[in-house]
Length: 239
Picture (cartoon, rainbow, N blue to C red):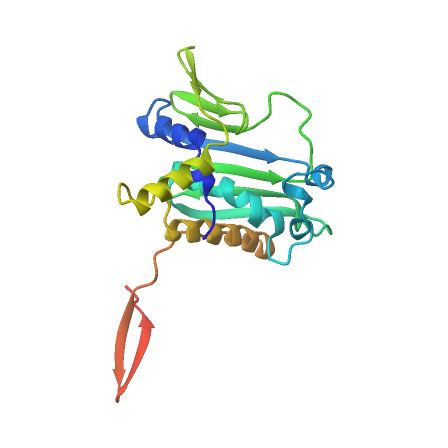
């Protein structure tokens, strides 16, 4: 099981509600930029201070460990993913195989997005690029997950601020688990969702390695049985 706290975070649930309500019209595309300085945090009491994160023995390093949650949030807001095309700038540091990972994402609903994960940098300009969703009637902007405000602006010149409680994901996740144990609600994030998020991480890394477009949320191929003598062979069903 993976702690998918970003699927429970107030900001992501509110952004999802805004998107689904049609307030900014049809979503055309989005930009999500995650910049952090992992090396700067290595000597402090932070996420990056642990030995197993600095020298991970699992494939993907910080991209699997941290960027996974961004991917879960995007899938939570926009749904299933058709395919990804990604590029990475290699580095020799253990904590992440790439200085940055740059990914183009096509969702099954037609939304196109661009996601950058840059765990070796510092964003010197303010406001940060953050998370921007562009629609036919307006735009959603979230500077970061701790700012407490989602900015929504419209083509008619009006705007509004939507407040959220930062870092609420783990609380909401544990509350959902508690309520599920007591039979008052269903688990919101199933293992199947979590598996899909992890698979997309590996699909992005495969896209970088093979320099190919990788299809993500595909249905299992249909199968047909062929009886030859007394043996049963399974073949892909070809339409």
